[in-house]
Every structure is written in C-alpha cells, then in structure tokens.
Image (cartoon, rainbow, N blue to C red; front, side, top):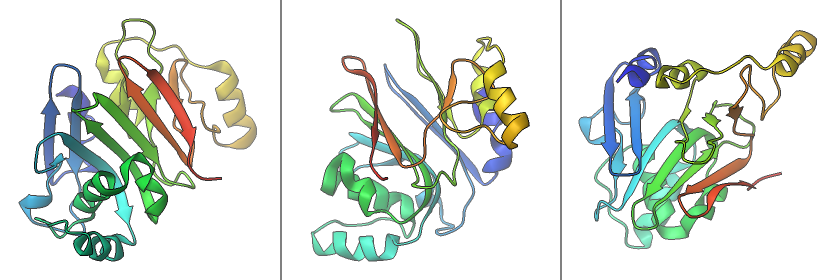
Length: 204
C-alpha cells in the first residue's frame, strides 16, 4: 500500500493490484487513451494466466490491434495495454520488438512463473529494480522512492553520485543507491524462481 501510494502522483485516476503466492503487481493509472474502467490495470488474459501492467504509450497500438484482430484475437478495451497483452500471447517475449513507443512494462506469466520487465529503446520511461540476494525478493518500480518504501535500507552509491556531478545524470544501469539499478534502454529482464534474474538486449 505504501509503495503504491508513493506513486499516486504518477497515476491519480485509478490503482489496481494482482497478487499470488510468488508475485505482487500494482499500478497507478493515468488515463489517456481509453478513459473507461475496462482499461484499469492490471490487465488479465482471458484464462487469467497472464497479467500486464505498464507505464507509457504505444504509438502503433492501433496497427498492432488490427493485425492481432486479423489473427483472431478479440479485444475488450480501446487502450494500448490490452494490445501489449495480446501481442505477448501472440508472439511471446520477443513481441517487444514490434512495439513503437515509450514504455516500462511488466508481464507476469502464471503458467511459467516468470516475470518479464521491458524498458523502451531510448529509455524515455524509467524502470528501477533491486538485485536480490539469495532468498530475497526483487522489487521494481517507476521511481526509486517507491522501492524505498519496502522497509529495507539502501546506501548511497558514491561512484554513481560522482557521475551525476560530472554529467548531470546517472547513466544506466546505475542509480544513486547501491543495490538499486536502472533497467537499461532497449533491454528486457526475465525473473523466475528457477532461472534467477536474466538480462537481455532486444534493441541496439
């Protein structure tokens, strides 16, 4: 609740949650494309096995929606988040290569027990995460201050702060805190209990 409340300013129109035995996803929504309640997040697949939350805007979602409709997919909303969901169902984790936009996306596959994180090609939308040690949870959010609400203490990262004073920004994947990282632009992450945390570049 505290984590979600800390991001209320980013999405004052609605907040929603998904939770099972391994994963908790939350979203604070700023309504832009589809103002109806149907587009409140998380968005679920018809079989409830796939869950999506996102921050951003998919510029080519209408073209993708038309292509997916031609492949037999039905849509319940007019927004771009459901297009992300259906695209993931149609093309799998590499669907991200078909998106044109600015985005930070989290997709949880209950069937595979995997969490997929994606950041847009140029890093317009922020996406921070913690690198868990053995037995710890991975936390992620659009802002660092949401992660800081998880009850753990994070020390400042002196090297990253030096980069800020030299460059006026902190290059990815570093952040101002040790153990809090920025997903690099054009990258995706795959998190699972068996496979741990894997990072892949989907665009160069």
